[in-house]
Length: 505
RNA sequence: GGCGCUAUCGUCUAGGGGUUAGGACGUGAGAUUCUCAAUCUUAAAACACGGGUUCGAUUCCCGUUAGCGCUACCA
Image (cartoon, rainbow, N blue to C red; front, side):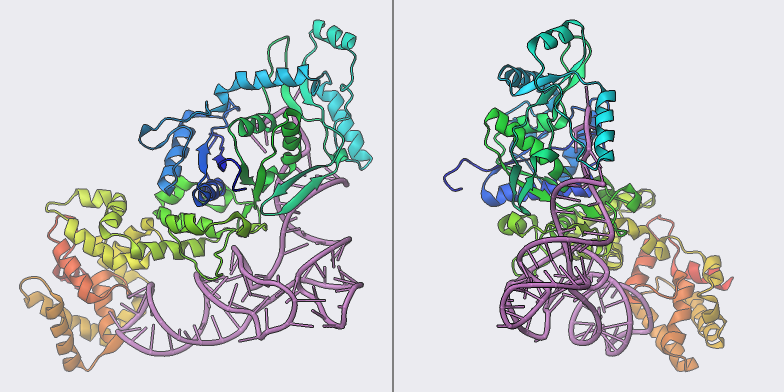
């Protein structure tokens, strides 16, 4: 391996929708493998499906990849407008002439042939095979048509597809995560290379064909992709053989499943990279999680890795072949982990969009105050879009709801609660200036001494009156936020206003 | 139906012919706290089944079962 040419891998998505976590993991593993081995990673756009491919998806995909922290050595959308590379074009729609040239070569060498079978005929073959419990493969009927028949069909304008003539031997390949995989010859039939086209116009090449031509021409040494391609691989191996190309190494990554053990899809909630980003997941958390989904550290213990660390220790040999269930709980844990490590300024910038309307009302610079708010509520969230709900006690005080809340009502009904509240309210009424933690602490001590009420009975009613909830952050941090926040024009009520509303004075 | 892939705690995984089968998430308990979150301590929790091979299989082989994928002139 060392004496061989440089390792080259690729990520080849089709721009027909949002990139989801499965594809992202494939991209990540490709990238990690390239970085680990000093190889090259390239991006190729599989846009042969003109109907479904859209430019905006390509742009989104490039953005998603960059967001995850991945970069590539060749292909469209490189950082800082770097050139695409010497093996282009990197969009399949721009490589049609290349495929046509190769098809002509195969045809002239007798390694491929024109198949005039109609869809109906093919369908009939399949039905028969199924009825006889045989593999449903093409019979090879058009394999050895004589030239007179071919000419006649051609002049008659019969549409034809181009099929590869597969040699009658087992098709095997090496898979870095599964070992040797072999398919018996009778289970692999001559694959279509080019779809039939009416008249003499050139047909459109099929995926299995173009992907192979591209991989070979782009010097791809390791094909790392989803395991849904395993069954395609023997056909691709046959194509490599027909051209006399070296068959690359393969690594088929297992499927990512939902909690119901079915293939992960939109049904299971957020699955696109963009949606994770919108929900306020940190890219390093998603990357770390995806790396762990199907791969484990050599020590069997380490769970947290930065991208750079992964690039140093990742190996395809340690990738697990079995399907993995996507576990949001563990992703959340990693996200909380990285939130703790993240730079506060960065977090503030990321959190801001979730408060954009509130903060826009500010009549004084809210940045410092906002930063403190974040340090208070950040430990309580799994992802950033949960922040506003955690800040509701500060932003959205509602005395009516506080009293009516069924969880609060029994606590407030207690005689002790009424006493505490009365004491607290009277102090608030006569107090001038903000209620600082020191002032608050003094009051609570006084009330405790005056009423003999302590602990939960003492604090709960006050907490409810002040925040509407019987649980929440420490008063020491909460009170300054409320008091200072009330002067920023953000619509935040002060302690006095809250007590007035709550006690109905 | 055919072909292929897969099978260790609920989940992600380590391990591998003889182990107290390890770690993490989650869950339970405890500590702390007015409470919640965070944090710390701690507990419970797994080798799908049946045959081989072997002195000995969770580990190797075969089969069964289950799940998934492919079975297109989709990608």
